[in-house]
Image 1: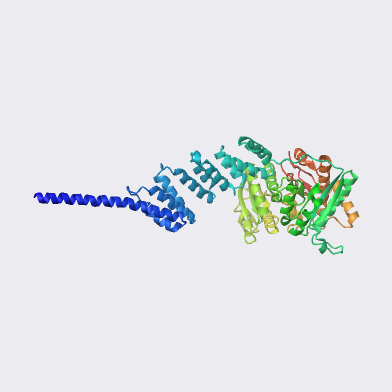
Image 2: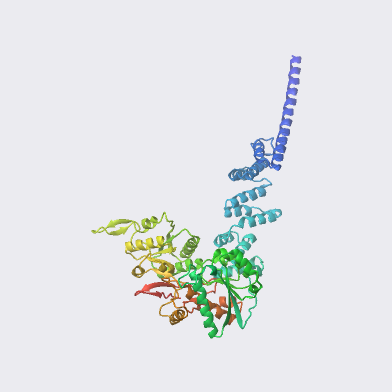
Length: 584
């Protein structure tokens, strides 16, 4: 019996040694496995690293590497662009190990994934959980990199509302505001951001040099005349609008001279060739010019805008509505209202004149159309209009307009529609953000079919096309935004027409409505008077002035930016186009 007990004791001791040895081996095995996995990660072998870390993730009280294995498993997945896998694993770490001392790193990586997915608000929220001062620089750098593609001012404003003390958001919002033409409230916001975050004012408000008055001002006109392709006949040329624009400007130079304003015009033919423009800008005489007019096409634009900014020479594009052409250049101006202004002003006009607050928007495929529509919608909602629908229309989907506006549900005895899916008088207005006849003619046709009180707002450019008879504009009460409108009974306009015919032996335009010679004349009178009254750098005076009276048109307003803010509206009355008088 004693032998049996002693044997059992020896057996138990032996088993204990084996268990102890196995326990020691298990610990060594976890450590070795982690070391191997980490080495694979460091060497960039992320797929193999994931497999190795995966074995260390399940719970085992003897495994001290669970948190680290989970973390590097997530990073290995991220580096292979498996961002959803990485996000899930990092979320699991936050849930299972909330007190882990590396949680700041987890939040940083989770934020990075959200930023990659353009979920900026969730990314900012995660970075807001980080309190360690040691990671402040890393967090600030991550925010700056993440916000680089965010250029929408309204999005940044919402971010700042959520995080009012965040310096990175504040600086980014200030930077984007400084690139835009500022409304008064945004100007005040920019000034408050500069003060709140101790920013350098000169980095955000570029002030023009002290103005210079001269006896003679030099204006350099950079137009695509393409003179080598112009024949000597009296027939209209392919680029006739360019020639008309220039001829109108030269007529104005003559008028200015009689008023005591001396303008020396230098004409440069860009030929729509970037290499030609580059050689022009290298000419020493260009740096001595007081004002650049042009170029007219977007592909010619970049080099000239850079030249204007570097050499601090004011530049005007006389015919474009595209603010992007001058956005980056503090010395760049648009003589026309921007598409942004036209969209906003159209919404304000309807908000002020329509009792029925419900409206719709139809727009085409171009960027211009999208800009018009987006700014209309934003201002409409701000002004109390209810946007029922903003519909993008393509050539293939144009029938949507009929389906939305004029699908009949009831008919009279003659089978004419008397009611529609969109009930009569349930809609107040339609803004058509397109010059495509396929779009606006369908809208007009649908409103005509409805026979209710819908007001259409569109573009003066429609009048150059024969898609719709003029009588329908009057019978339907269609309103058109018209920055280039000149009333027929304007004495100055009549005098211009007579002078043009006398000098050139033809009418100033063959188009039904648009008149580039008139635009050139009006622009040059405006620019010449600005130079005479306020010198080379007339922008400060221009922005302090209220609406500047026009010569052939209604006027101009540059008080809130570098584009003309004044957008008049016209309609037909008794067969004649007249400007609609708006309440101040």
